[in-house]
Structures are given as structure tokens and as C-alpha cells.
Length: 181
Image (cartoon, rainbow, N blue to C red):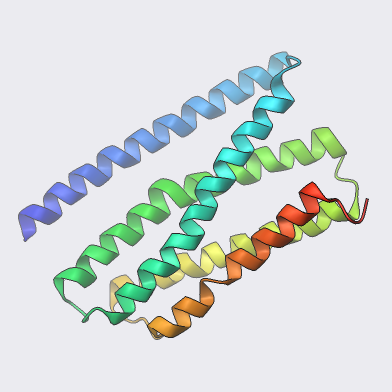
């Protein structure tokens, strides 16, 4: 079993390096584009924002689902150990970077495209703050699972899995419909 964990750790380190290199490349390209401010910048940053948000949302939906299965696994069992590795990788390699890119690019788009004006935009930002708080809650919950101190049942995790759905719907309505002009 220790050989499996060493391999998992090595693979995790490689994935982490690739993720950080990708983030650094995107940030460098974004800074260069921002400096030169080409006409296409705003549209391409919208694309980056949508891709980052989708990646983040996938994690916000999938991690509570992993917690459902993890809550049913016997503490200290091989499945429980596997869930810990999966949860940590999801948080560190996908969710964390995707959240940072979503926030960074999203704030830039809100500033450059809308000058932070419009009630719809502030409601959307409030929904994203809610998603961020849920992300923090999930991150702390993953640490509790890793320490063997989870207190929530699989049923409670199924219910918690609905939180990002509601917040996502609010954000999408605000962006697409802009009901409060």
C-alpha cells in the first residue's frame, strides 16, 4: 500500500506542477494582453472566465458527491484513504486555481465592461461570494475527512450538494437576464 501512496504522491506533484505552470502561463499572457490592450482582449477574457467558472463549478458539484461516498466508507479503510487523495487533488489542482482565475478575470470584466455598475452585477458578485464561502466550507470539510473527524452523514452531504446549484442559477440569471438593469 505504501508503494501506491508514493506513486499517487508523485503523480499528484506532477499534476500540481503542471497546474501551476498553466496558471503562470495564463497570467503572463493576460498581463501582456492587458498591457497592450488589443481589441480582442475583452472577448477572450470572457472565454477564459467561462472556462474557469465551469471548471470550478464541476469541482463544487463533484466534491460533495465524493463526500457522500466518503461518509459511508469505514474510517481508516482503503476506500477512505483513496477518497482523501481524490478530494485533496480536486481541491488543489482544479478547484483552487479555477476559483482564483474566475475571481481575477471576473473582477476585471466587471470593472472594464461595466464599471461595477448595475444591481444585477452586485447580486451576481454576492452569489459568487456565496460559492466562495461554500468552497471554503468544502475545503475545511476535506481536512476533517482526512483527519477522520467528519460529522456529517451521507444524506446531509447530498443536501449540501444543492447549495452551489442554487447560487449558480442566481448568478446565471443575473448575467443573462440582467433583471435589475
